[in-house]
Image (cartoon, rainbow, N blue to C red):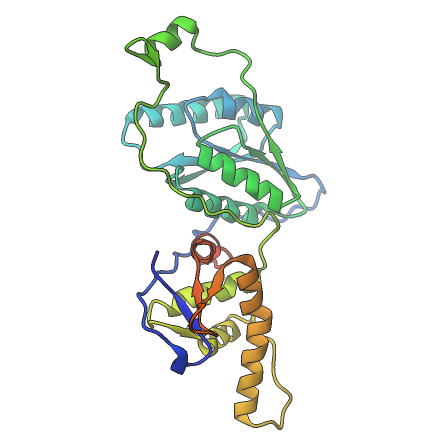
Amino acid sequence: MREIVIVPTEELAYPTNRCCACEVAPNMLQDVPRFSGRKDRVMIACLSLDVPMIVDPAVFYKAERIHILKDDTEDSPIYEEFYDETIKQLREKLPDIRICEHELDTSDYRKVLRELLTIVRVDEDDFTDIYVNISSGTPEYSAAAMLLCMQYSVLTAFTVKPKEKALNEEDIRRHFYRGGRPVGAVLTTEEPVKVVTFDPEKQDMELITAMAVIGEFSLEKSYVTYEDIIDGLAEKGIWRYMPKPGRKKTEDLQKKRMYFRRNFIAPMVEKGWLTEDPIAKRRFMVTEKGQAVIDVYHGLDERN
C-alpha cells in the first residue's frame, strides 16, 4: 500500500509516494415521487449459476425493481447464458419488473460494497422496501451485503435454501471428483486477499469526506497538511468552525488546527483509519483500513 502522510504544517512533512483516490460512483436512475403511500419493493442480488436463487425470492417478494450485480471479468459465454435465463424468467413471472444491471468484479469485496452503498443511497427512502439476497452470488458479495444490512436497519436481509438440487450423487462424483478424490468445483486457487472490515454502524460522512480530501490532495503532493484538508472540507461545505473575530491570524489558524485534530484526526485514529508515527509525533499515516474507506465511500454522494 502506498503511504499517505498527514501533518499539521509543512515543516513536519516527510516525502512519500503518491496515492490515488477512487473514482466517482456512477449515476443511478431515481424514481419519480410517489403520493399513494404504497412502498415500492426492491430486491438486490448477485448473479450466480443458480437461477432460482434470484428468480424465486423476487417472485415471492413481488419485486417491482431488482438490482443484479453481474461479474464483468468472466470471458466464458456460459455466465451470459445464465444471466439471460435469469432475466427471461424474471420478465415472464414479473412482467412489470424493472431490471438494473451492475457490471463489476464481483470477487472484489471493496468494489462490491461500494456498488451496494451506491444502490442503497439512491433507493433508500420512505417509499421503498429493500430486500437484500445474501444467498446469491459470490462470497464477497454475501459478506458485503450482510455488512450493508447491519449498517442500514431499513434493509431486509434474507437467505434462500435450496429445495431441490440439480445434481444427484452420481453427478457430483462425476464432476467434483478427481482421481477418485473429492475436490469440488474449484481445482486451484489464487493467493488469499485480506478483507478490510468496517464498523457495523453507518459511517460518519464528515470523517469520510475528510478522508476523501486527503486522497485527493495526495495525488498532487507528497504530504497533506491540516490546512489542505480544512480548505477542502470548506469547499465541500463540511467545515463549519470559525474562530471568534478580532483575534490574530496566527491564533485563528492554531485554533483551527486544534479543532481539526480533536474532531477529525482523533476519531480517525480511534477508528483505525490513521496511525501516529511513533518517532515523529504529530505526523499521521493513512492505514490500510483508512485507504479502504477512501476506496469504498469516496464519491458516493456525488452525482453527474
